[in-house]
Structure formats: C-alpha cells, structure tokens
Image 1: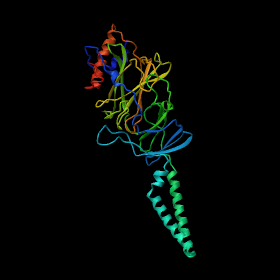
Image 2: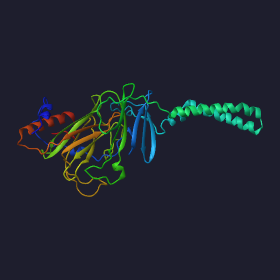
Image 3: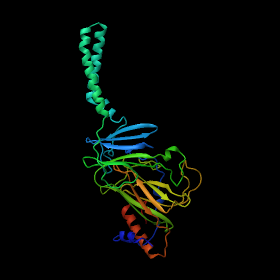
Image 4: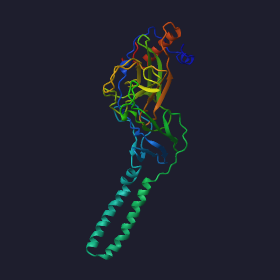
Length: 377
C-alpha cells in the first residue's frame, strides 16, 4: 500500500490512463567534477568559520598536513541561468587576507614605493659619505617601515562578529553562523566524488571530503523528488526538479561524462542504502544533470554494464531500502538534500499503487514538459 501521507500529497494531480515506459535510464550519466565555485578545499579537519562586519568570512582548517586560512567575500545567493553572465562566485584569498588587504592594498603599494625611493636616496648618500642626508633619511625610512608593519598586521587580523546560526537545517553541516546583516554563512563537507554503481573507491580522489562554503539570505533551493515505478513497473524510478526562487536550475551544456561546461549546470548525486548486490550501508548509485529548461531530472534503477575506467563486471540494479540525494546549491547557496524510503516492488493488482503510478506519471510529465528524456509517454 502507498503511505497515506503520499496519497494526500497527490490530491489534485490528474491521473493518466496508461502506465508506460520512461526514458529515465538515458538521463543518467557518469558525472565528473561539477563547476562548483563553493569548493574551498578537500579533506579539511579542525574547521572553523568567522565573519566580520565588512561581510568577509575567514575559514580556518588543516588540510594536506598544513594549517590554512582562507578569506572569502563578494558573493550572495544565486542568479537564474543566463547566457549574459556567469553565476555569482566568491572571491577567495588563500593567504588569509594578506594578499587582498596588504599586497593588493593601494596604501601598502604607495608605502613600498616610497620606501624604495628613500632607500635609493640613502644608498647615494652613503656612497658619497653625505652623513647629514643619511641622518635626515633614517627617521623617514623608519616611519615607512612602521606604516608597513601596521598595514600588515591589519591585513591579517580579523574581528569576528558572527552570531549563532539561526538559519534552516542543512545536510553535511560542519560550521555555520548568522552575520550582523542577517545573512547566513555555512560550511558543508561531503563525498561528492564517490564512484557510481555502488563501487568501492579505488582512487584517492574518489573518497575525498570536499569543503563547500555558502552565503545566502532567504529561502534555500528546492530539491523536489518523487518515487514511482517505470518500464511496465519492473523497476523503481526517481524523478523531480531543482529550483531556486521559483526558477528552474539548469546549465546550458555538458561533457559526455555529465560534467557541466558552464557555471549554472548542477548534478544530482544519488545514494542508496543497503542495496542488494552493493553491500551494507550507503553507496553512490549515480549522478545526473538537471535538464534545460525545466530543471527536472529522472533516474531508473536498472542493471548497468561497467562505465569506462571502472572495474570489470556488470552491476546489479541499485534499488535499496532508502535513498538520499545531494546537490550543490546554485551560485553560493548551500548544498541541499532529500531522503526517502523505497516503495518496494510494484503490484499491478493493488488499486492504490496503480492510481499512485498514474498520478506520478502525470506529475513527471508536468515537471518535465517537452523533455523527451523524462517524458512518460
């Protein structure tokens, strides 16, 4: 039987008369690294987050055996997909502010230029044994050094003004706070690069934990996901839509392996729990793009031949007891997720399941209007 909560959710959706094949399997691809400006580092430990009143965030952590300090600023939320510009992205200074506020500081540049001039004059005075000139230049040089030291200290100092986090719950949360202006900052860490089809990582890069930074106000992106059956109800099926501010989230192009070729494209990363043939626990089932122009997607749980570069041997259908999905938020919005319970096998003699499937077909067609990859026809 279909849970009552799901049946209630579907009221008002017109039922379809037939239960036919969906091209969901064609929509799934082997996804490579996404265009994600929010990735700060990998395998970070001891992570902390501070935000000052100027709207800058300071991230402190340890990675690759070294202590790191990263200053981030200049981005908020996201814009809708467009050919006119790139998606919003942080400006990052991996020197912890030294580069941004000292090396690139006009005041520091002017002081350094003045110091070089004074040092050149001192060299000439020394060469000509002009002691009066040397005595005159010495305090001027000392004053410039003091100015540079003050600018250097100011560039690497940081006054945290962030308050305890008051935003919504987030998956994979590591650190968060709410800034004086009311905006939220968050750091999330998860294994985006796991191999698909339930395979155990065989390369170091496949098991890294990426550290992602977000800065936003208002509502989060909406990851709307539903479960039903596909291919004459022989396989479980997942479909949905990713949106932000009531606008679909999608990209304008991708590589053959599913890697977006622009800053707008996003992959849905789907995990399965206790899938038969995969072993116990959570495993990465697959990753697939949201579609242009609806931001929709679909996926059928079918057996797979190994992908190029994968270990030999066919893989079973990855249907499990539970499913979860994670997607990197558009722009600098936080990563959002979904989790649901398997519907199990389809029973054609169960009138409630038949009605539910008809309603899900209608909803899938609505979310993926004119999308031949996900249209159930």
